Length: 461
Image (cartoon, rainbow, N blue to C red):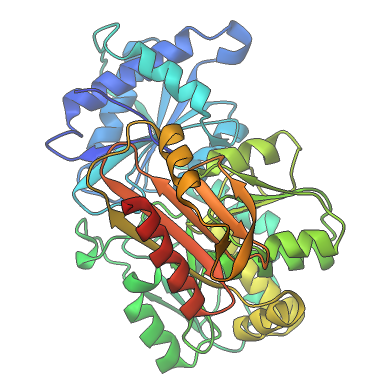
C-alpha cells in the first residue's frame, strides 16, 4: 500500500494498514532519511522512540527501535508510556530524532507514527522526503534495544515552566479526564492537590467506547463530574496528550476559539509576552482582535500545528493556537502540549483569582462573543484538486452573505469566507475521501448554523 503522511503523521487501521510489515517499511524510510542527512544535521544518530496506550503500541515501538538499530542508529525506547510532547521535548534535550507510535485522537482501531525533531513536529519537507525513501531498502532489524525512563525529567521540565506550588493549593476541585490516554497519572504528580479528581484512567485500548478526542460530544462524563463536584475546572487530554479540552466551572464546554483568547490575553497582559500571534485558519476572530488591541502582528496559517510550531521555533511568532485544542507560546516549546496548557490554565485561574467562566466573560466584554461550530459533510465524490475546487466555490458566492458584505476570501487551506462583521465560514475538502470539513463562527449559535448551511449549499451546487 501507498504510505502518505498527513497533517501530523501517518495513520492507518490496525491489521489492515497499520501492520508490523508497514511499520517496518516506514521505520526503514525514516532511518534512510536520517542516514542521508549531512553529518552535522544527523548528529550522533540518536532516536527517541515513544508510544501511547493503544493496543500493541509498545510492541510496534520496539519494532521501530529495532529497525533504527539495524541501520546503525542509536535508538532509545521509552520504558513507559509518555505523551507525544515528551518525545518532542526530548528531541531538543537529547539532540535526537523522535518517533512516536500513536494515532492521537483517532478511534481505537487506528494507530500511527509521528516524526519529531527540534522540539516539534516534522515539516512537510521532512515527511515528503521520508515518503520518497519508502521501499528503497529492505528493513534491517537488530536484537534488543536500550530502554530508558524519562518520566521524571519531563515532569521536572514542566514544573520549571509553570509554578505548580501555588496551583497545588487551589481551594476548589479540579477534574481531569485522561480519556484513557498517555498522560494518565501525570497530573497527580504535577500538582499535589488532594482535591484533584481523575476519571478514565484505567488501561483500556478501546477507550471506553469513545474516541480519545477532547471535544464536547466525548466529554459528557467530565461535564457531569464538574457539576457534581462543583469543580473549578474540567480538563480533558487526548490520546497522546498534545491536545486539551476545557470545561468551565458552570459545566460548559469552552471551544478552542474561546480558550485561545483567554490564554493569549493572559500571556500578553500578565506574562508580558510581546510579538506575533499566529493561529490556524480554522480558528476564530477573538485572538486577532486581542493582537490588534495590543498593537501586535497577527497571521493565520494552514491547518496543522507544524505550521504554528515552525514559526515559534524560528522566533517569528510568540503565541500560537489551533482549532483542535493545541497551543504553544514563547518560554514553553514550539509544540502543543496538553499538560503544559492545563498547568497554564490553572495558573491563570489562581493568579487572576477568577473562574474559567469569569475569564471568558471578561474576554467577551472586551472583544465580543464567539459561537464556533464545526460540521463535516459528505460529498458526492472526493476532491482531487483543492485549488480547482476553491476557484469553483468562489464563483458561486453571492456578493452578500446573510445580508453582510464579504470582506475577504482566504484560500491558504480550503476557502475561508470572512464577512465585514468578522463572522466567517471555512470549507476544507478532504482530498482523500468525499468529505467537506466546515467551520463557522459568529456572535450567535443561530447565525453560525446558518453559515454552515450556506457552506453545504455552495459545496453541493
